Image 1 (cartoon, rainbow, N blue to C red):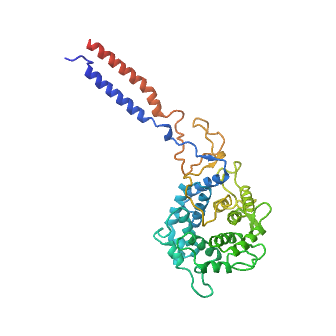
Image 2 (tube, rainbow, N blue to C red; image 1 turned 60 degrees about the horizontal axis):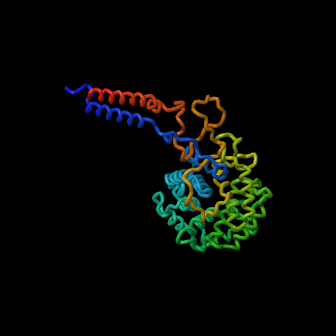
Length: 400
């Protein structure tokens, strides 16, 4: 009869204990399982992208036009591509209602959707079941007083259409550029509805800035020079570009982008300075930190002002803007995140950390200190080791 703790029995016990230890170690999650803080930055442009990414991730009601503006903003700062992909998917999911409201194709919406796809490196000829380029070209008027006009679109729609088509192999129809040049006011300004001259206090720098980019993209230098001079003439000494008599970040954002494309770097930098003066810093409400307000004393709807404001911070024109090489995530402003240990009292001041596109799960506050599985390993490993030593000792005794 074999001894109670013979060598075979000892080997079985050893194997069993080793397997037990392996199982216990596997139960202990590595530190990476629990996500840390969202990445942070002191760069206000990146912080604006981080704030905007949070809005994309948490608000499914944002319209396609706003999502396209967000895509342009993410590409402008080279970050937030995870959120940009979500934005593009949102545009695609509602493409029909956006580009053909009421069943009729809208040139401005077609062009803006095209630009969003192009900036993201996609194919606008096969997006959401549509060929956006073919749809847009099909709206071009041939002959008559509106020769070269895309449908019944506005000056802004025409400008966006030219910018989108300038990025295609087929290029821009010459008649489309001729129509846009003819719509320019003698002052160099472009009005949204084509009316000239604009009444005092109702100037339209936003349309003029997009038209300027379209003129530059198509080589219409004479009209581009006049539009540039007009934008410079209305820019305020603080760098702000006013519309309807009030300097704001929407107008300053697209205005600064256009002036930079026209080679007016000093004016573009001044527009950027104005935009940054309205960025929400650490002293703001936690939900606003990183966003950019609309005007002095008028924060506005931040999800509208922030994307276009970012364009003043060095973005190339829309015909050249690309998301290639941009980072997937977008950091939040450094002060926007605090990292109290779970064991600290709930009364510890400071805003709660907000998830970003690459932050993963927030720390599990149900546990304090070391996780329960880790405690299990700490307690049982010495016990298992003692049991293994005792088994070996008894086996040696039995073998004598």
